[in-house]
Amino acid sequence: MPILKQKHILLLFVIGSVLLLGFLATVFLSSQNSVSPTDSTSDHQPDKNDAETDGLQLYRNEEWGFKFQYPKDWQIRQPAFGSAVSKFNMDVEPLFPHLPHPITINILPNDWIERVQKNFESRDIAPSEIQVGGIEGLGYEHTSEGLSQIDYLFPRGEYWIVVGGKKQYKDALDGVITTFKFLK
Image (cartoon, rainbow, N blue to C red; front, side, top):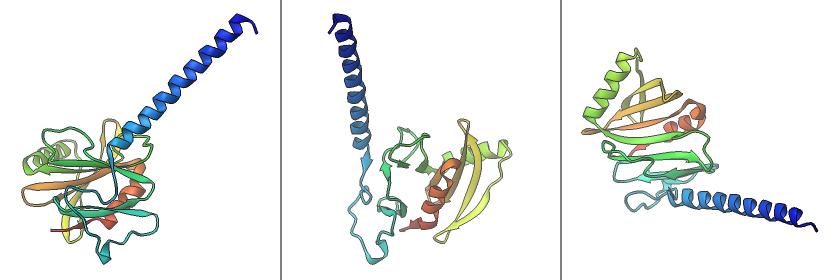
């Protein structure tokens, strides 16, 4: 075999190996940020009302007082991002999301929500009313970072729970909202 052809084969082998290692490292690192369905900030003991439904997993968070179901082939990533304002945040996302933060749950203080609402008002974005688990909330459809977004805001005393997502993931977001329950 000519030396030039051997060098090409060796070069292709090295490039393929590097690409494979990069892919495996990405999968490994992304799995380090995900948590199992019932992981939360406190212990969870399933009760008869927490049975998983076909095709859905259950997430329960005792500290912030909520639970919901999400697609079985999706994962939880928490925290979803670093923030000096957010008290807690998490993403609910497919194993290989196409967009950043497909569905996000964010706990924010009242003063921050006031700013968000003023921003929506200044952009002529009117809220719709929504009720989940007996809690009245506000819904906003808007554009964020060039992507269509839907956000639902629920007051919880000194903070608000914001459940939102990209409009491209509306079916999954609707599934989270319809199964969302407040524990306290």
